[in-house]
Amino acid sequence: MEEPDKQLVEELCRSGIGRGDLVALAIWPRTGLGMATPTAAASVSLGVEDPSAVVRLVEDALRPRWVLWSNDTAATLAQSGVRIATSWDIAAVDRLLFGGWRTDPARAWAHVHDLALEEIPRNAPADLFGDSGRGGGDREDPVRPDGHLRAEWVSGDWRTTPDRLRRWAELASVVASLQQARLDELASPPRASFTARSESAAELLCAEMSIDGLPMDRGVAEEIVAGIVGPRPRSDSDAAEQRARRDAEVLRHAPPGSDVDLRSPGQVKSLLRRAGFDVPDTRAWRLEALRDAHPVIDALLTWRKAERVATTYGYAWLDERLGADGRLRGTWAGSDGAAGRMTASGGLHNMPAEMRGAVVAEPGRVFVRADLGQIEPRVLAAVSRDAAFARASVADDMYAPVAAQLGVDRSTAKVAVLGAMYGQTTGHGAQALRGLAAAYPVAMTYLEEAARSGQVGRDLRTYGGRLVVMGSTNANEVDEREARRQAAARGRYGRNALVQGAAAELFKVWAVTVRARGADLDARIVLCLHDELLVHVPIEQSDAVARLLDDCLQEAVRRWAPDDSVRFVADIGVIERWSDAKR
Image 1: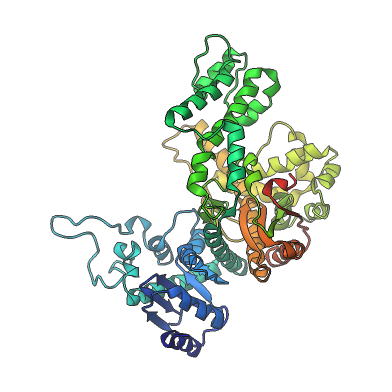
Image 2: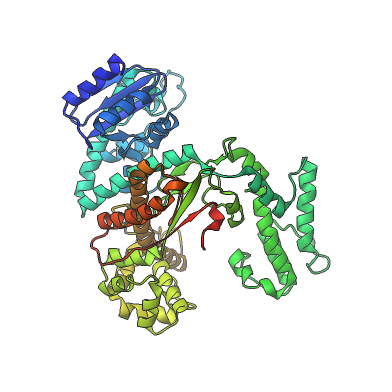
């Protein structure tokens, strides 16, 4: 240990910092680092070429809960091989407390200080008098006289010197303390604070998955693409010829004289109308029901799959996203907005099923894949505390006892339950949907109350405390019919957001528990897809990790659920490639 590093660790120890205590961190490679504690008992800076090495020392010695402005810091650390155990992610907690997806240090600071968001300063060129809108006062002070953070600090001036890194860490410490106070003001502060910690850990996982990437065999991937769209085009004209051949396979089934741009939904509707099918839109699920009715529809659906691969998941995608190390990378985020689900860029969340055959474990390793079963109805039973609905969750297939209770077949029961959660009140299952209110009144009332709140534009909070901003209709801008339509849409959104949001919260608790418990087994989560985990593990540890995934689910449920009345299950298997998973 270098002498300055040793002194820093000793100083933190003398300040009374222990395991799980908050320590704010700001780092920048080749500049150094700054650390601060909420009580200001320890506020330090250090100029060092590799600040991540110092973080590793403090992590190993003290295991604090690191306060980070966002997971950008975690990504910087992960890039250097440093994986911290716990954090308080200011951006994640800001989204939890105040809703939405958009946030940054200026917005998080303004939120906890009750400052007007529309007055957040922005970087701007100087005017004729040399004023760049910096708000006066000492420009070395990151806080302007009006209380807002200076735009130039938010834009990167915080990383120019070790002292500025220390000051930036001090500000992060202030925000974290104020966020904790806001969480304590909520109706169920212990639960909201727990969610803040698990959401923060999920951001650490996102940073690590972004760096690690998803194992993929390039040769297999290119074979799959070639089988769908043809060989790699040698030129733009070659690519154009391939597109024309794909189009011709559809148009040869079209009525005579059809000259249609298949990439135009309006023209495709006209084509289908001439073929005898007057459809309101050309969505895949609608056309799928008509696939056998006319050859042009089957050809169109086949064309769409090939077009999607050619334009989005083809050779260019592999060239851009698949590294020389055989890892497919995108940027992971812990929250997609109101529902709070994990998401990723680079096609990781929307990869066609056909491409999953190219997701292959590396030599000496396998995947342990786990998928939560019927998570949303089970979550509804838990958060609504409907005892009758909870009893149905004891079954491996929750829809079976629901069907028996309603006196309908399983398919109808499933449609009814999903309809209740998504606001679908007509069509298949509508009659059974009405029976749910009698069989499971507590759960259905929970959904109806969420819908009514959404209809009038009243904001909601998920079980874990995430704010769902509903908005409202401006009656002066729309007629009565449109106002009713918008209110109904908000109602459907509200009831679904509460269930999806709570399910996302439980899923992330499970994922971060696996992250923590699996470290000793060299188990790395490489994909989080809705309710599914894909874990890359050494072959010799596969059985142990499979057991661990279920143990972690039960641990997550004990920590997350209001009681033990609802059973949660996962389908867990050991596979060599993603496509081997049961569907």
